Image (cartoon, rainbow, N blue to C red; front, side, top):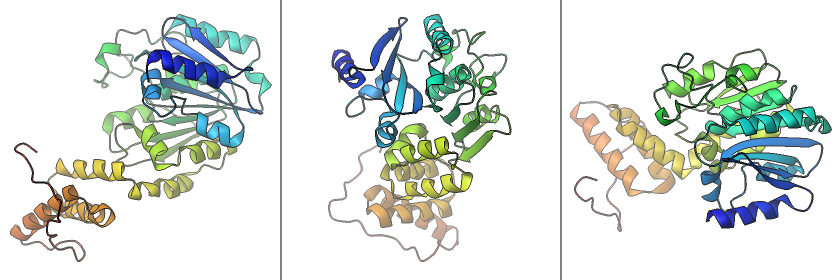
Length: 319
């Protein structure tokens, strides 16, 4: 979807009651009318253009629940650090925009989670649903964060700055993160308070929001967060759906390639082979079983080598 086509799609989504507004040089605000609950989402426009229909991630749950939405969209990795955007939210607060709703939910993933947390201060008493959140890139607060170096020049202060500090006025905060990713876990640890519920998603991958959406549980998670029924147990129950999600299984299989644990790789590859019958899982299973046999170790369960299937492709050099 081109930028022009995307603009047309967003304008159509606003309808006659809502609006699509340019905010500064690098941001758009899309407001869609709805019921007594408002979802405020933060995303990158590039991610939206790659999505069928090009609509914000809030669209699914808003349509199902009849909720209103306010979607803040960034052109590039802006981290939502623009004075015009600060003024826009100041104006919403001054005009009592958020007061028109019984419930307000801020949501986002990655950079969008930073925006959702940082701007949630504009609507005290809101629910904040954060997936893989970053607290700040300020060097004096997160000197261990070595990613996103091109964004270090952005001023992470003084307004709407440290996202981990901006959630103090929220009613409840839900933080989904992968505890096996050190840098992400360190960011998540900065979000503190009795109103913060941590929801671990081990081995979720680099884009957890897209993973939750792909598995088909994102809308239910946001709805449960709004209703205050989202608990670590409920999240774990929904997160189990990843075991049948091919992209997550592939990512987990590749993760086992980076560690020297043939027993674990055989276990993972055997599960994936039963689910998908894919050649990649078959090759890794056989390699892991061979290594276990060479070390005189038993294979997990009743796993045995799997013969190549008709149609399995021969690997080229370097694959």
